[in-house]
Image (tube, rainbow, N blue to C red; front, side, top):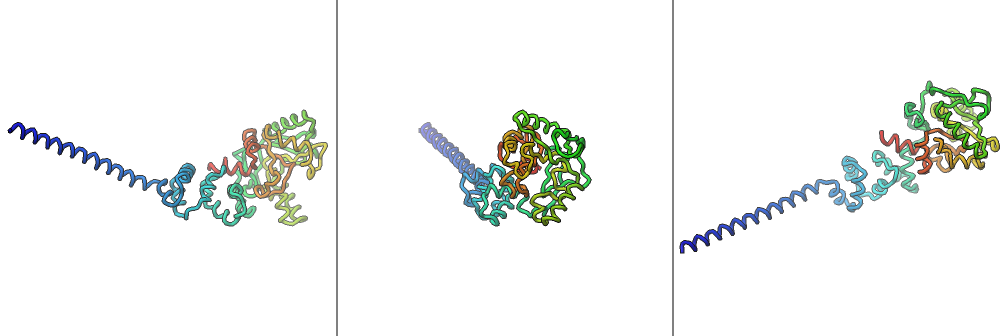
Length: 325
């Protein structure tokens, strides 16, 4: 009898022990799940979904934005445009608020154009903000209606362009030596295809550009002058990396865009590091009317990206250089 009672007692103890273990496990699981839920509620994903974004949208935003930038979004009303902007190829997170503001002002523009215009600062009036160009970037230096060189800047190692390749007098036209070498490579390749390129203008110092701009301003007015000429300090010609060129068969700059030589340059100039700086349909980005004769040396790697992606140098600089600063 005593043995039976002892067995029964042991069974009860085993039962209570088992029940206790099960209870501990259940409580642990519930506690862990509760903790994980509380922890998840602190995540950006949870907060974005609570804000009304889908899981897919939240994943996109988390993949492109920092927690600080997401906190900025969470402080705004849900806006699907933000997700669309983030998906744009040249999206820069630092410009998000400006994209949204500009999109409201220019609702007819595509988001791609909104991103491009904001990135290159063209949402402002031309020359409204003046930034310092960085000559230490060499062939990647940016000079436009927002970036300017100092009045005393002169590039090193300027080399005269021979009269075999240029109009004017000996010494009138110059390029930085490495740009000169790349121009000769380009010229030789064009010549092999039957085109004889000729330089009309190249390096200009600050004072020379000032004279050019003032002449246009006097004769055509400031607004038109700003469309066709750079203000002093804002001209790429001051870099020594630019040639204005046509060909012996089509020397007229205004009609050069109709020539076979121009079409050849459009297809092949990037192979030698040269780009068309102010192309057709990009005035809203560059600030200049198309100039089929104005070619800029940027190096082969950069030129290839610009050619393959169909962008201007302003867009390249804004995304690939300034965007990483």
